[in-house]
Image (cartoon, rainbow, N blue to C red; front, top):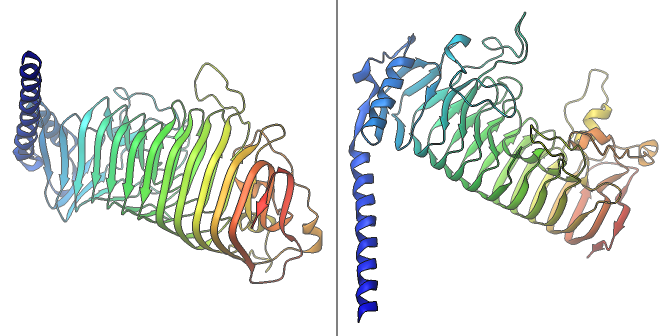
Length: 464
């Protein structure tokens, strides 16, 4: 009887706590703070940083709520978002990044692990932040407004669009993001993230315009997004901690470099990553790039139901030994790449535009390469399954190119075209164990003197 009463008391306490949280969340959602009430002016000229920040601070001090951005063009510099804040932009509302670099101070920002510190939206160690609505966040970071390097300056000072460090419970819903000076949405060591129905338009804006960068993040869902980026579109990084439990689905993506990539930093690694039902298009430097070259673990990767049109190299899997530390004290030994499954993929691989001589350059041909799966001597990519794959290749290589020797390049940044024209037109597999092709159909649209599949130090390869 006593135990039963204790259980009932515990249940009652849990119910009270739950109802209290629900009531608090509902109360916060009903607290609306318009930036107009705090002096913001929607003329596209007036600098509104102080007015918008005052709105955010007041909302936070009240226990949380919604910071409302109504229709209009509001120019602003760096804004610090805080816990329990919903930043909501109405249809017709635009937050415009200031064109004055002095409006992006870095004194109160954690130093960025990669790139410069400046950003338009910033949050650190905060929880329950939501960015929502039908409006636009436009960094206006064109090369004319923010060149990569300015005369007399050291380094690069182009602002990111957004940088969140060490935050939890983040929701991004419905907004359009445009024209960052540097990277777009950059989240570092954040947990419990949901991104839904985002529109990202960074294409042909400038260099290094990544779409979404997740560095050491956990428990992430990205779905129903429409992304056009100048650099890597959905990019997983691990400059310190591993990216874990990442889910990506139902997205349309194009990029000048890669719709889906991880490994530009790979110290922590990538574990339990799933991508399904996505469309990748107009991506000349490659489509799916899975690399770990800084000592991390790349394990339990599942990719399925992907259609790719007008892309370069369709699948690139690389284990290397660049061994960058990204400020960590210990340099790691060679990492691990294993348990990778890719299924139900259809792709059309194309060459980039012709050069001025009327032919194709070595660089262009390298970008339109075959499937490449490669470790390094003594360190193998292991347990890879490709199933129900249909890829059409352009065909272009001569007899001379069919005999190309492929350098190891163990310590280089991971890009497939750095290896030049590979001696296979369909798949090149080196330093790998237990790679299995099941119903993999590779075809040519033109003439090619190379073999369909080339194996080099590939143990227990199965093709059926």
